[in-house]
Amino acid sequence: MSFLTIERISKAYGDGPRATLALSDVTLEISEGELMVALGPSGCGKTTLLQIVAGLEIPTEGRVLLRGRPIEGWSRERTLVFQEYNLFPWLTAGENVAFGLRVKGMKPEERRQAAHRILGRMGLRGFEQLYPHQLSGGMRQRVAIARALAVDPEVLLLDEPFASVDALTRSRLQEELLRIWREYRKTVLFVTHNIREALLLADRITVLTSPPGRVRACFAVDIPRPRREHLAELVRWEERIEREMAAL
Amino acid sequence: MGLRERTRGVPLLLGVLLLWEVLPRLRLLDPVLLPPFYQAVVRAGRLLISGELFLHAAVSLLRVLGGFALASLISIPLGIGLGLRPGLRGRLDLLLAMLRPISPPAWIPLAILWFGIGDRPALFIIFMGTVSAMLIGVLTATQGVDKRLIKAGLTLGATQTQAVWLIVLPGLLPAIFGQLRVGLTLAWMCVIAAEMVAVRQGLGYMMIQARNLFQTDTVLVGMATVGVIGWLLDLLLRGVERRVLRWREGLEAHELFDHRANF
Image (tube, rainbow over all chains, first blue to last red; front, side):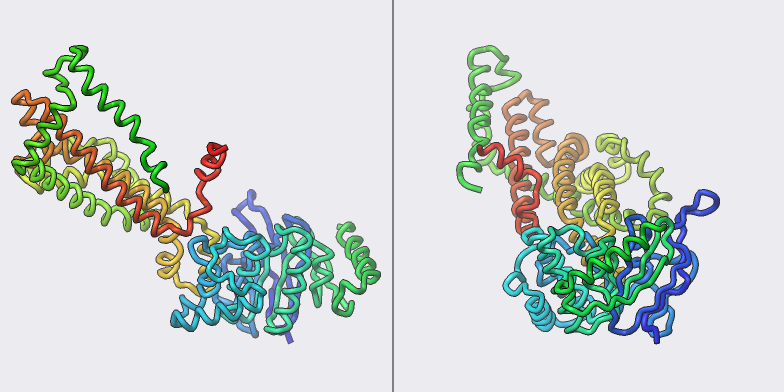
């Protein structure tokens, strides 16, 4: 049964003859605890799709259901990790992670401990007191993921989170995301334009076309994890998806 | 900041004071129009001993702080409110655009008609002279607050009110400090203008009286007093700013340029 349902979503910007269509009739069904990757070239409306699921944008048509109930606006049950981190520059790493707990009304000492715990799991013990600009890109993105996890969401949305870090950091972050995903058992919707990244992470991949974004194909990836050790299969899958995307 | 950086401005200041002393002494400038520095120092000493300077300065300072506080209390919340609600701003824009070019001295006749003579017209003039500049500054800065940070806050469960207090306001603080400094400078400009006509006390009054008696040295003492107090207030404000905005250390543009200069 579908846990998160994106049902026939279309999104147009502007109206009348000058409207541009960003998403057209996109339907995705994600089960509880599943890691779904939406894969597509830039401009295919991936970010728009995530913003709609996060409740930050309203679709022109269609709706999003969580546990069968339509979502209404934004909520801490669906947290979003942005490509450009969007950490609060005036808060330390620890305070950033604790932000969601603070607005929920948790006491300072409790939320400090909670932030400490999650940062520790992300391998950032001892960095609580540093400000975002004192951290590297990879560390910032870990703080951003920790911040999104801290409020214990039902769904974690990630918008090309590793696009702006170097290749080495990226593969470490991918491993960490998988570990965290297994540990916290979250339902994840991850958006990327990187085929290898999609193959390394996803239970299932939905390929979107561009533009406007439409669902082109959906694959269940059956390569055993850890997938880096199955290079031949990765390459075979890569070719298959490339063919699919090139045939647009 | 080290002692060396703190005292970097001193040589230029001493140079100006030296010229001030020497030019009238050499009759290159008429000493009646510009009495030498030393004479102004002596005058300042006398005015201090008689308590006159202190009284006038204290009165002016209180007016500046009062008018400035009033203008800040109105312009900061209003600027944020208008910045976040463009609909409201549309209704106020025209009025603001027309009020802004009316200079503080232009309010003096009305201030006297409405409030007579004393503190109230002075406060009114300071308020009118500072509020719109600060309002525009805060409003513009509010429109520049990073929308993505607010999105991040909302998805983490912040209410709109929490987003204003915990995201918009801290994001605006650097700009607010900038506006406070602008406002304080404007307030000093206004208070002297106001005191030249609408009051019987204050540094502006002291200066205009001295001019009538041709005591140019007292005029200069008044000007210097404004300069020194203004400088001290700015120093205070910057000290507070550095403490409050500690997180900006390592983020500011000037650091790049300082770095090059140090080579």
